[in-house]
Length: 284
Length: 356
Image (cartoon, rainbow over the protein chains, first blue to last red):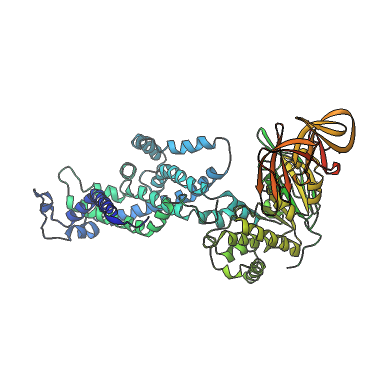
C-alpha cells in the first residue's frame, strides 16, 4: 500500500483504526469477560451491577486443574480425539484432494458437490443414527468410535479446502518432475506437497479446532471413558447451580492449547489464505 | 560432458491423438536424426506442442507408435524415456534452490551427493549461472530462470531435449541473445533437440530441419532454405517469411496467371486448360514496373530502417512489397507490379498443393 500522504490519508487511517478497534472489541469482549470472571469468586460473579474491582483468586484454576472436578483427564481425551482425528483426516484428505484436483474421471464435478453437500447437513440430524450405529458396533464411549464419527465431517471439509490449493500448483511443475524421474508418487511428495504447505497448515488448524471445540457428538457419543473438555465444562452447569467462575477458568484452560497452535501456525495461515492472489516468480 | 553422438534418433509413426470428439493429431509421421536440431513450427492449435508432449510421454496417443533409437517407447512413462524437457513456464521448483533444482533429476536417479554436486556445477557453468546456485527461483530474473531450466535439462545428458517455446517469456533483446547461445549449446552437446515454436524467425535461425504443422498435420518437412524457398503448400507459403508470401487468386492458363481483379504474371510453366490457382510471390521478389504486370494502388509504406514495406491492393486482394531501396511512393498512387517467372509459386486453389 502507498504510504498515507496529506490530512485526507491520515483521517482515513484513523477511521480505519477506529473501525478495526470496534470490531476487535466485539470479538474480544466475551473472551475478556470470561478471563475476568475466571479470577472472581463465585459471589462476585453474580453481583449486580458487575464489580470491576475485586480481589483476584486462583482458586478456580486450582480446582479445575488439580481439584475434585479436575478437567486434566478431559483435556487429555480432547488431545487424543482431536489429534488422531486431525492426523487421520490429513492422511486421507491429501491424496483424495489431489485426486479430485488432478485426475479427470467421470463424475468429478458431482463428487466435488457431494463432498460439499455433506457439510450442509445439520449435525443434529445425524446424532441419533450415529448413536444407534455406534451402539450396535459396541463403539460408544470409545476413542475409535469418536474419531470415526469426527472423520465423517472433518474429511469432506479438509478435502474441499485442499482441492483449491492443489489446483493452484501448475501442472507443468509435476510434469517436469515426472520427466526428472520422480515418478507419480515422487512428484507428489517432492514437488506438489511442498507447494501446498500453507494449505496443509490452514487445513490442519481448522480440522483440529473443529474437533477440539466439538460438543454435540462428544456429549452424546462419549461417556465416562471418553469425555472431552467441552463436555466436562458443560458439567459445571447443573440443575442446582451453575459454577460460572469454574466454567470460565475451564474455558481459559481449554483455550490455551488452541491459542498455542494458532500462534505457531499463524505465519502459514496468512500465507496459505493469500495463495493464488500472487503467483510466485516464473509462473505464468 | 561429451557429445552424445549416434544417440537420440526419434521416429513417430502415424501418431493420432483424440480428445473425445476432437482430433488434435491426424496421423503424424516424423523422422528425427541423431544430433539434429529439429523445429516443430506452426500456429497455435496446430498440434506442435501436443506432438512434443507425445515424445515426452506426457500425452498418450490414440494410434501410432513412438520409437527412440529403434526401441518402441509408446507405452513408456516420461521418466523412463531418457528425455529432458524445458517448459514454456520453465516449471522450476520454487521451494528448492537453483542447485537443488538442477540436481533434482540426478537425485531422483539415486546418484551419490558428491556426483550430483559436481554435475550441477558443471551444468550451471555451461549456462553461466554458477554464481546463482544458492538462490531460489523466485529471486531470479526471467532470463536466469530460463537458464536454470536449461541446466536442469542438460545435467543428466539425456538422449533427447524437448523445448516448448523456451524463449517466448523473454524480452526481445534477450530472446535474440539466448537464441544464439542455445544454438551453440546444442552444437557442443550434440544432443538431438526438438524445439517447438510459433515464431518462424526462431525456427529459421535455429533449425537443421523444420516440420511445419497446420491443423494437426505436418504439411512440410525440410531445411529452413527448402521451407522458405519451395513451400509445398499454400498454407506454408502464407505462414513463413516476414512478411509471409503474397498469395493472389487467379487463373493459370498457358504460360501466365491472370490475376482476379486484373493483370497478368508470367510463370514460366505451361497449363493447357485454365486452372484456378493461388499465385505466390515473396514480398522481396515483387518489383515495380512502368506498365503491364498487375495494376495496384499504394495503401501505405512502412519504414523499417534497412528496408521498407509497401502495403498495396490489387482489386480486392492485398499484397506487400519489400525493398532494400528507397520507395518513392505516395499513398493512393497507382503502380504496376511484376516478378521473375522463377520467383513465382503456384498452388492449387482448392487443395493448396504446390503445382510448379
